[in-house]
Amino acid sequence: MITVEEAFKKIVGTANPLDTESLPLHVASGRVLAAPIKARRSQPGCDMSAMDGYAVRSNDLTGGEISFTVIGESAAGNPFQGTVKSGEAVRIYTGAAIPSGADQVVIQENTGPSDVGIFTDEPAQPFANIRSAGYDFTEKQTLLEAGSFLSPRSFGMIASGGHGQVMVHRAPKVAILATGDELVRADQPTFLPHQTVSSTTSQLMALISDCGATPIDLGQAGDTLPALKKALLLAQDADILLTIGGASVGDKDLIQEALNNKGMTLNFWKVAMRPGKPLIFGTHSKQYIMGLPGNPASAFVCALVFLRPLIDKMMGRPAPLPTGVALPVATNLPENGPRQHYMRARLIGTPGARQVDPAVSQDSGHLSVLAMSDGLIIRPPHAPAVQAGTMVPFLPF
Ligand SMILES: Nc1nc2c(c(=O)[nH]1)N[C@H]1C(S)=C(S)[C@@H](COP(=O)(O)OP(=O)(O)OC[C@H]3O[C@@H](n4cnc5c(N)ncnc54)[C@H](O)[C@@H]3O)O[C@H]1N2
Ligand code: MOO
Image (tube, rainbow, N blue to C red):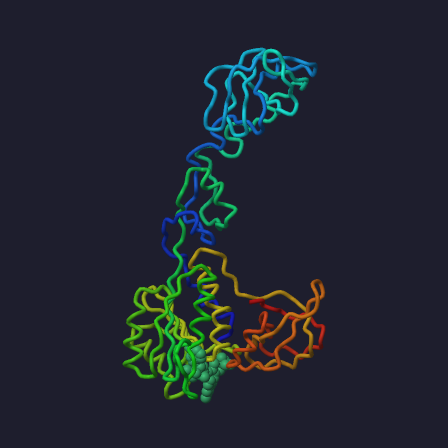
């Protein structure tokens, strides 16, 4: 049995960002740029007014009352074509091009009507209320480097730079095959007592979607080699193949043999963790294969600790081993055994005085406990007993 750290290195340490694809901006949030983005235009493209008012020559302004002849209008998208000369003003609106000759915008609140147009007693302030050409960025400027993480806040700048698409690392396709003769679909009309709903698939699909990857449900296969072989054929295109169940030592635990028959190179089987011990990991060509243990909490913990970082790495994002944050534990904890224990726990207390309270049942089949938990207390192998109030690492879901 290898340690969690060793398993993490074997799974995530060997992975590389996937190849690239070009995506429209509205679906690229959460992705990582595979190539730098250079501006195709300057922003703004010319000097523009930041306010509604009048464009004038600052030399004309003295701080005393001065009249200006209004010779035309510059609206956003409809620039004034002439030149502003001394004593002249152009009516201007926010986002409109500054006419040539003018170098200051007097806001309309600081003007009044005069016989020839307007008057103002504004002092000279060259470039007041003007956004100069390229003050945001200039043509050919690198807006974002390759490797940058994209989030909604980036897309205004990218679009403004003249890009409707971005080149990003592809998100992995993650195929999920549930295995076991006992498994049935959640939406069956009725259930027999010996049947179990294949619930882990839904849990994993949600987690995979949350990561921005694409889950593919391969359904469930019975506990025979021919059934598993047939079902595994459907996983050819996936970047990651997850199987659920059949990973342990029972006579019906055939998934490792089925994966070996498919051509998997086994990297390891069994990790010193609880839950999640019988995890299988291997590769087949470029496909990463994780044989998740059947117990629902075991599969979920393996997905949090190994699958999520693997997806992150393949998408080009940082992918450290999840180690959690330190919070005080609400109860005494006994000395831990030889496996790293990921204890389902709830956050209790008030903001600023939070504690983590481990669930009484840590059975890996306990779905309701998992559903009510906020995260996992991490107990390293052979961690000594601790008293309530001791800081422990907590990994929020
Ligand atoms: N003699 C031993 N028995 C077991 C060991 C062991 O070391 N020696 N390990 C235990 C541990 S730890 C785990 S975890 C489980 C994992 O076993 P498998 O991966 O072979 O899982 P199954 O036996 O197929 O299923 C276990 C349990 O989970 C339910 N299950 C399976 N798939 C799903 C699904 N898609 N959705 C919901 N529930 C699922 C299944 O019905 C079983 O109840 O082995 C222990 N045994
Ligand atoms: O490791 Mo099993 O995954 O403890 O239930």
